[in-house]
Every structure is written in C-alpha cells, then in structure tokens.
Length: 481
Ligand SMILES: Cc1cc2nc3c(=O)[nH]c(=O)nc-3n(C[C@H](O)[C@H](O)[C@H](O)COP(=O)(O)OP(=O)(O)OC[C@H]3O[C@@H](n4cnc5c(N)ncnc54)[C@H](O)[C@@H]3O)c2cc1C
Image (cartoon, rainbow, N blue to C red; front, side, top):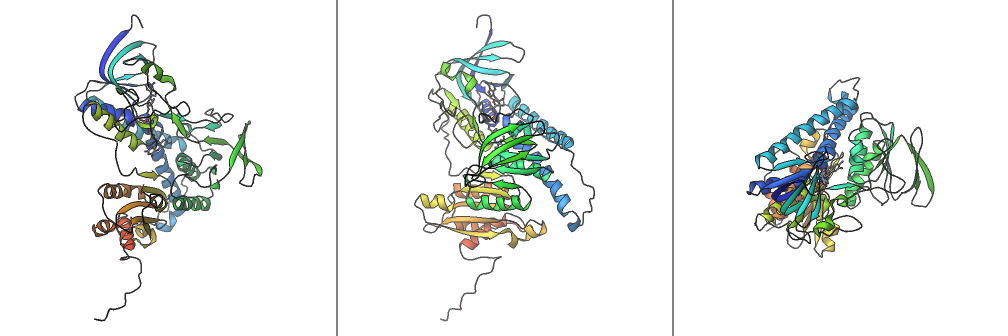
C-alpha cells in the first residue's frame, strides 16, 4: 500500500452495530484511542434493518389490527380505517434516523473516531480501510474487535432478488403490502414479520421444516402462537420441506413436501426467505491476521473474554457464538472493551432472555422444565392465566399465561416462560431474580404494584407455592387442636 495514508490506533473496531458501537464506546470511556470503521450505517442490523424498524412496523400493524377488529366494541368509532404502507415506512425511517443520531453522539462523547467505509485485515496488526470514494488508508492497531455481524442464509435456487424473493431486510422496506406472502422459515423473523404483514392485509402462509414454529423455544409457547395465528387466518405448515421455487410474471410457486411425503404447490405474490443467518466474515481476510473461523458457518470462536485464537483480536456479536441477539452483542462488546483495558470482566451469566414480538408476545428466561430435568434438577411448574389478572381485563388482553419453573428441592427459581400482552417487559425482573439466586418465595413475597402485568410473576410464584391469591384453591380443613 505504498503512498497510502496510515493511521495508528490502540483499538480498531470493525462494524458499528450493537456489538461494535458498544465496544467502541466502552473502550473510549476507559481512555483508549478507538477507531471504528462502518461500511453502511451506525447501529448495524439492529437499528437499521432489524430490532428497531421491525418493532416500529409491528407496533403500527398491531394498532391497525386493534382498531379494525375491536374499535366499536370499546367505544372507538373509527370507521374507514386504512393502512398506508408508504406512510408507515416514513414513520419507521424517522424512528431509525433519530436512534442512529443518538449512537453517533454517544460515540462522539466517548472520543471515538468513526470512519465510513470497509476494513479488512492485511496482517496481524494492520488493516486496509477503503472509503466509498475509493480512497484507501492503512490502519495499524494494537488490538482489534471484529463486530461485522451476520448476513441472511440462502438456499441454492431460492436466492433473494429484492423483488419476488425477499429477505427480512427487504420486508422492512416494503412500501406496499403484497396480497399474499409465503414465508419460508418459522423462526423469530418469519413469525414477527409474517404476522405484521398479515395484520395489514396480506394472506400469509408460513412453511417450517421442523415440527413447531419457533424451533428451540418452549413447545407450549409455540403452540400458543400457532393457535392464535391460525385463528387470525395465517396458515402454518410445520414438518414441511420446501423443495422447489419457480418465479413467474405474477408471483412465485413453491413446491413443498408434507410430513406424509405428499408434494403440493403453494402460490404467492412474494416469498420471504428467512431460514437463518451466517456470520459475516467472508470479506475480512481473516487469514492475514491469523484468526480462525468455522469454514462452514463463518463463525469465530471466542473465549469468555471475547478473544479469538489470536489473543489481541476480539470478536463480538453475531459474528461469534450464538444466539444472534442484540442484547448479547451489547454485553460481549462491553466485555471485549473492558478486557482490552485490563479489567477482569468475563462473559458469564445465568440466563440469556429471549422475547418474540408477536401477539401474543412470548418470553423465555432461564430453564424450561424439560431443560431443568435434563440437568438432573427437580423442576415443578405452575401456570397463571392472564384471564385472572385485573390489568389484563382492563386492557382487553386476557389471552395467555405465565409459568414459573422452580426447583422442588431447593425452592430456587429456575425459569419463567410466558405468552401474553407486554410479557417481554417482565423478562428483566425474572432475569434479575435468577441472577441473584432468588427462591420462588422471594418472588412471591415481593410486593408488585396493582394493577400491572408484573403481577403475573408474583401470582405464578404464589401458585407454585400453593398459596394463590387470584385463582381458587380448595379450602384447607380446619385443623382441630
Ligand atoms: C428483522 C430482524 C429483527 C430483529 N429483532 C431483534 C430483536 O428484537 N432483539 C434482538 O436482540 N435482536 C434482534 N435481531 C438481531 C440483531 O439485529 C442482531 O443480533 C444484532 O444486530 C447483532 O449485532 P452485531 O453488532 O453483531 O452485528 P450487526 O448489527 O449486523 O452490525 C454489523 C455491522 O458491521 C458492518 N460491517 C460488516 N462488514 C464490515 C466491514 N468489512 N467493514 C466495515 N463494516 C462492516 C455492517 O455494515 C453492520 O453495520 C433482529 C434481526 C432482524 C433481521
């Protein structure tokens, strides 16, 4: 790279998503000289093409459905309610731009230098930066943090084209609602975005290879969601394999094979391909830096300080260990930055919360009963219904339940799973309780404000203890002295 400009930095961060920007901010706060390179937009997938824009649209879709389905019954006479996809997009963009500006200001206040362009390794302690205008610079670094995220996985023959075959990123930018949509993949994005488009008028069919929607999540949660989807007219085909895709002038034809092996053809205006993601490490020239990645998945293995096999190079977020979640990336970013600054932080925790933003919303924290049994524990669960909660009635949100899993021997709280309104907001309370080693009785004795959805946690804990407040329990026989 003769004749190119060279920069020096203590910490080079490649990628400005949740993992990268959090690492850069924390390293900056701890006094390090930090350079962050981002080829697209600050905030990464989460802020620009994932968590935030999807929730902005899901919220709009949910309001629209509520107004069109229950307006009259609660005294809101909003007739001729219509959905304007282009305006919804404008609203979503405004949210994203505001958040992105927030990230820019946080980086600035931490003293981080941000370069727009692409970085790739040229040696163990050097990288090449290419700007969008073709300009190149050499970057010499003492340590680097790889935070390049992930890209949608593709099946040969099903390649996305941005028109008829769409990724989640394309779905989030749709300015019109397809009359019909085939969703290939019943994971989180397939369920969340499939439901959003169904709410605003698309005829949606979800095709999932495994026996349940949201594979890997508690089976009761999956059943609750599947039942609701079907009642709302979303077709759910599980244990179904897609074998062939044809594109024509009017839409797509998807050949699928049912559990009994019978083949059939589904037709739709568009196909949403959402079968998972793979680590984005292909263009980084990792071999120049001596960093190893899994040849199949692209993922980089890290230790509990986020170090790769090259100890001065760290990896955080989707590019490393699962799960691919923004809150996991945040934590890893902080651990990497603090490790570089000589602190003794570790990537260690009891529980990684998981929330699915459908209606009903789903939440899982800690162990399910099955997982606890597999660990040789003695789990017992108690399930409290939303229909027994005052707040749920006031908000016409009586669908769902929350179940507590506790250890019968020690009384320790092991996990909580639930489906229902705003249930994701309860994940942090439960997570804190598990992290602090709370017993189910500790949770039951904590006074929860009335009327709130958080009472679900206390009520389920009381039920687990066989001391319920708002579900009937048989009267104990008076013990005669
Ligand atoms: C539709 C959808 C909804 C989601 N909803 C949620 C949710 O509700 N909750 C949740 O926790 N997670 C959610 N996620 C997942 C979440 O977006 C990711 O887990 C998270 O963004 C990962 O953060 P990251 O920093 O590892 O990578 P990313 O956010 O992907 O950021 C990586 C960045 O690196 C940049 N980059 C890549 N290569 C280079 C290079 N060579 N040089 C410079 N820059 C580079 C990219 O442009 C990108 O900006 C969702 C994802 C999708 C698609």
